[in-house]
Image (tube, rainbow, N blue to C red; front, side):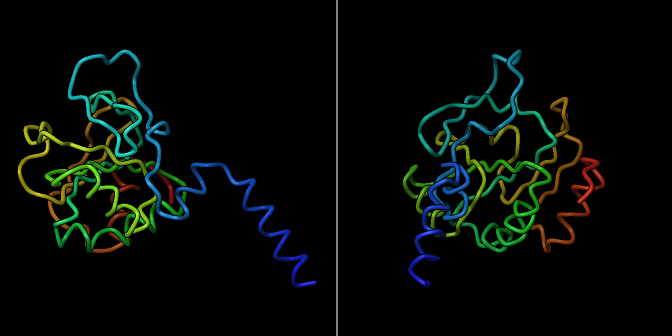
Length: 174
């Protein structure tokens, strides 16, 4: 009976979509889920950490929470559990922007180690510094029209804080 259940569970896991399977294990997630405006063709083009696509940052549409971080940043590390909690609710999209890494592989290793379950853009040239500023962490809340409706500069201290900001600024009921 136990072998039958193990076989059944294993077969069921193989039916999970590749993105869901990646997300549950902390593998680098595809950026294909990022909602973008096709009419925006100019701006800062950032490669996805999966190294398969580029996204023009200014084309991102929401409601979405954009978290700018670096693996080397201790406050950024402290925030991750709150973003994991938010992502588990499946109510709002999250996009990460990894900045000031030594290389793309360092970012990938960090994503896998921390089991990050949302798409991550990689700012290899610090091109977003003019948008987000020099310090991290920074979290932006972007509405469906692409307007930044709120900027959280510094550490998100709790899941409750993050959920409250999503509800207040993006009007998403959690």
